[in-house]
Length: 441
Image 1 (spheres, helix red, strand yellow):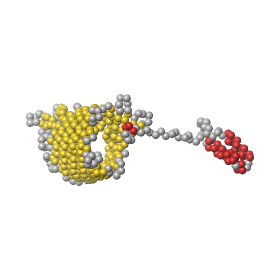
Image 2: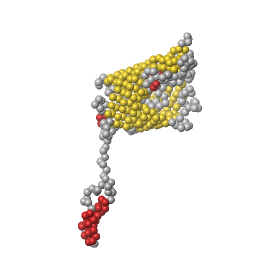
Image 3: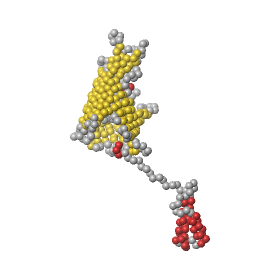
Image 4: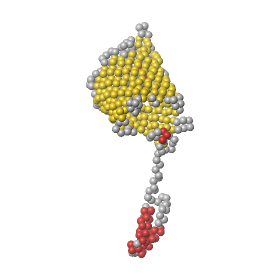
């Protein structure tokens, strides 16, 4: 306030001195000059505690970019940690049907939808902190989704999709299983082809052989994430519960991976304990050790288009169906397959009969131009469990075409056909069409 008054006084005094005719009254001029003498010189600070105009704002300190970590990373103020925040939002509209009412979505059952919509949002946090003992990185991804399911409230799901840290070859947290290789390039929103695609808790160590692109990994992973179930079959002990007992051993996973300019390959192996709970008069646990192995090859196809590639892989599992197919679909007796069943032998003894399964899958990506892309994914799955009573096979083919008019934005259409061939029961055929709109940021 004082500063403002003095500024006005100085302006009047200056005008009086420059244009004497402005101040006709000499007494008024003297008063102005006296008032100006009482004011502090221009630019002098006013004593603290007196009302005054707000002080000038401090200079803005902009965040520093972490160019060494890549695009989008910035230095967190007051730390040595670089961070990047990104994510995506997408919307899908599905039209689907099936000629099999036993658990398959479609128009043929009044309780099933023929159309549906789905919205998802992901937020991702990446950090990198240099230390004297090596770089520490973390990656966290939160996934929020909502699917329309007809009348009634539509539940929103919040999932901790990734939460993992790495340091000097050590990986700890929740992330993609080290067993997995190719997990698809199509949207695969309703059905997923027959391959291993599982997020799980793990503790792993990876050793890389210099700059050769070759690495080996050993991993201890969550057994419960891979459990499919134990089925009811012929000779089944009627007093036995359909399910696993408590986890007694983790899954052990080994991996060899090669990444080169021409493409790459991976070979994986895993153990999986099947531990069933038998709820009969005596009550006891029975377990058996299952296992799985898989191999895949990626070949880049630059002569077809920039970024084009072909992937082929195969897997076999014994009492470890989830390592062969994450989303298997059986017939009316066993809708999703199983790892094993408790059966009663002819002499009255019991045994844990493990299932056998194998799959072949792959995908082709072709970029027609920077704005147009086509993806084709396909798989075949064969499951053998309890002789012929519960055997089934799946064929899955997905074709999508994607339009990318601007960076980080896409509109895609996809068609998927799935064939379910159970040994017992009728053949199932499912068809899905979807529209996908996505923005990445």
